[in-house]
Length: 140
Image 1 (cartoon, rainbow, N blue to C red):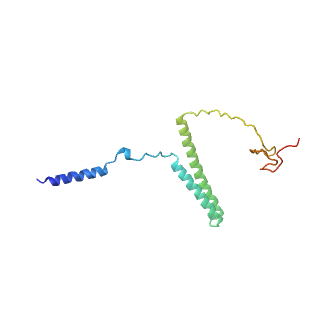
Image 2: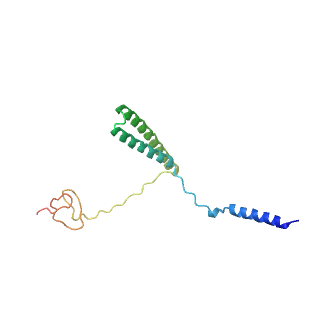
Image 3: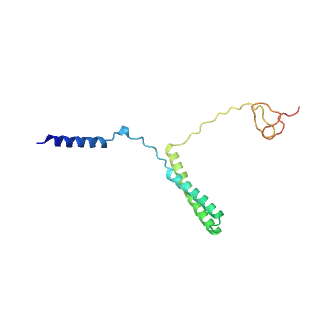
């Protein structure tokens, strides 16, 4: 019996098995898929369609009736896509539970060098406002 043929076959199966073996740690991390991805793509294509439609209308390639009808259809489709986005956002917010607003604490800084006319503020004192050009200091 010829053992070299058996050893060669086993070696070939071993090499093919090694080449086809994929370790889980070698696989890339799955990227999270946004539930809005297809809707965002559709929204972008509608906006592009509206831009193209307006461009063709300005070049007098479309009649006014055709332009208005096509524009209305695209706007209806856009409204449906935006409503679907809002619906998904509401479902996601409901699944997470109520959002408790965190109170915002704002400390007021003293308003130095503020223009009495337009309200623009500057770091250093000026004779005239850099925004509106009116005098900064009121004569006393």
